[in-house]
Length: 295
Length: 217
Ligand code: SF4
Ligand code: SF4
Image 1 (tube, rainbow over the protein chains, first blue to last red):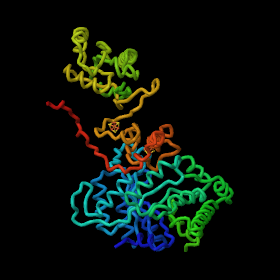
Image 2: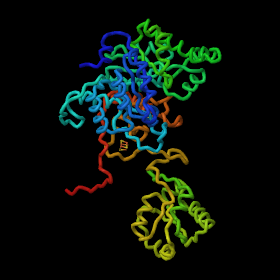
Image 3: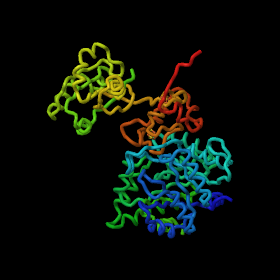
């Protein structure tokens, strides 16, 4: 049976995904609250996997929590922390518990996180992980042995449309699709005209594309991302708009901008949906969706 | 020429390693650590001085031509006695030298360096790692640039999402290996080789510890 998320993708409707972050520790109340808040509003929730290489509750456990609460999880899996045995084992476990969406990521360097001296793995890369999912779906493990009981996933990957230079990214993007990615969530896009150019190219592939949108919370945050986050470019006019927000009104302004962008993407049918990243402010995702006219 | 690249350990660590050993003989190396200025004549003299100031008795010092090679009878006859008088040999070579000396001298050896990698001097005073000797060489498909070593994550199918303006996610001064490979392959009109999906690597070309026997015919 295809997952609910897969069905949403195939239905041709404008798909909305958001993110929930597992906690640092075993107290899952905050995450559970976000899941409750979002489960009936979005088509699926990405459960992040030690995002930015900061050690947290596992994404697999987080995805189970989403499931238990009646939501639709997209299990994020990075190649940073596990070799091919552990990745395949986790995929089987996920499948056995009804987690049927996976986002395959290479993962950030451990040097960027809070366990800087850890041994990084990177046995596989993101495209190889997508291929591994497809191999397991055929009832075989990566070594060619038979599996007793298979898996079924809606598998996706990411792309950075604002990367510089873009060509190496696009080559990798094509490889991920060739390996079997059915959906692509993008790194944040702010310059819609640029994104349209990317979509002109991406439309030739049989893959669903969800535009990544990151909520801006202040002009400072936008400048910080321009400087420090790879492949994210916030245009000056948006920074100015954020800076001009009345005191205490920056978040409201950010919600308005994000909502406006989503509405444009939807109205102009630029791509198949959006992936909303509110980074720590998950509780305002419904407000963003309202501002976009989605609720 | 390839070199063993080393960096001196912090003096506190060296002092800790030498705890309870009062008489020290210091050995440098005329090859790699001379080139990296971590164990040549000057650094050996400075180390001897520093250790004396910290209360150690220096029974002698020498810089052998190649510490990873067997000691010559000349060196042994000139310095053997003073080495024997020491509680420990502090070796300012790479770990190959330390291990070679340890296997020959039957004395306590203490490394003064951390051995970082086998590298190449690309510009005066600048050393880079370009091959980690993985045992399953892939550079026939990457324009002669090694992604296993030069890409921080050892990726073989193209860049990660962290690449930024052609630089690597871990260091804005380090070129992203995959930007370099892309540029090189483009120049060579061989981009097809980057477009081909590479299967997961064989990470166990030669199980560690590696060994090699010339096959008999
Ligand atoms: S792939 Fe890289 S690390 Fe492996 S042998 Fe070739 S150059 Fe060396
Ligand atoms: S930025 Fe480039 S070199 Fe650095 S880890 Fe990513 S792909 Fe490798």
